[in-house]
Length: 144
Image (cartoon, rainbow, N blue to C red; front, side, top):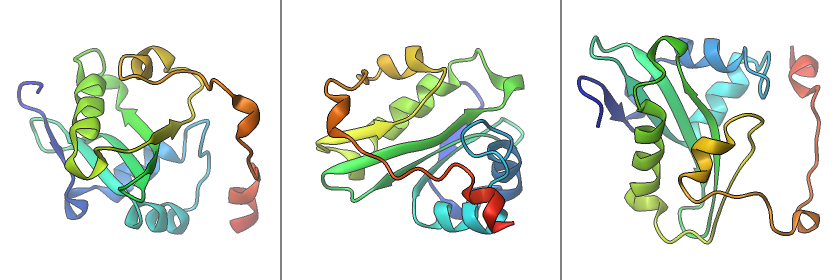
């Protein structure tokens, strides 16, 4: 817990415009259309981080069957609020969430936050050749 801040899983509390603005400017989802992101969030377990003033300043979502597998995506903390332990608190909250207990595998993709995720048990793939992907990096440009 970080003094004055709070984390919520209530989808109705999420500020979609804040989430879209941040995520649509990231390396992993640059230019994602609003309709695509909205549908993604509606089918995910969302975690919002809110400032003492009630403004949404962070987010993450888990895509999961809530029995065996999950994929962690779209994790961010607004730059003005970094360095306060919020990302660690967010990760701990996600990993303590009751519906996400007992999962056999949780995956994520990151280019630059390995140190954060390693603190929560994530590691590089032990057998990367067993995973495959269907990759369409230009799909957001095709949808516009």
